[in-house]
Length: 184
Ligand code: HEM
Ligand code: HEM
Image (tube, rainbow, N blue to C red; front, side, top):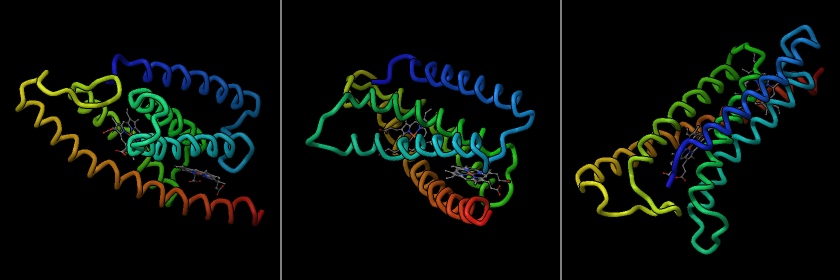
């Protein structure tokens, strides 16, 4: 079960703290931190690691039948936390320029976050135990069937967007490191 909005509040607080640090860097450097220099680069790398964790950890936990570390609901909360904070750090990494493939990768990132909110909404319509298993009979069967069908449809959209995002991110990272870092 995903009760309350705790993970959204924690993500919001983390984003405020990160904005504070970013603001301080802007004031001290008297410029928007460039994507290829220490701060902009660092925040991009950390944000991307968060995004990679978002893409993999919850799915691994969901599919592991034998290992039972931590509740599914806690992993989903962590998924949402890193799925918001990671993209936010990556957004600050862009230095507010969105050319070419890097711009397209940012757009895919924004789309997956919006899609995540839609999925979260549908997910919370299906009653579950604390460990994420569905509970039968709490809602009218018809409404429950509809929510399940919607969630299945949502998965078929959300997952390919995620894959496209990571393919395009890896190409951007390879190209950016080659042209903007190693050739400098
Ligand atoms: C999903 C993750 C990422 C997104 C959406 C993203 C997006 C962007 C954007 C929009 C720019 C600005 C492009 C422009 O000048 O118009 C940029 C620049 C850059 N990014 Fe990323 N980035 C991501 C991850 C990373 C990571 C992990 C690294 C390094 C390992 C990286 C390295 C760079 C570098 C070096 C530049 C500067 C390129 C230059 O000055 O020409 N990016 N990125
Ligand atoms: C970098 C951003 C994100 C990526 C790459 C991502 C990726 C994924 C992937 C691959 C899955 C499928 C998990 C599976 O069934 O194995 C998933 C599920 C899900 N995501 Fe995300 N996500 C992101 C952000 C978000 C955000 C911001 C939210 C909520 C606000 C969210 C909510 C959900 C929900 C509710 C599910 C369905 C869980 C289930 O059916 O078991 N995601 N996400």
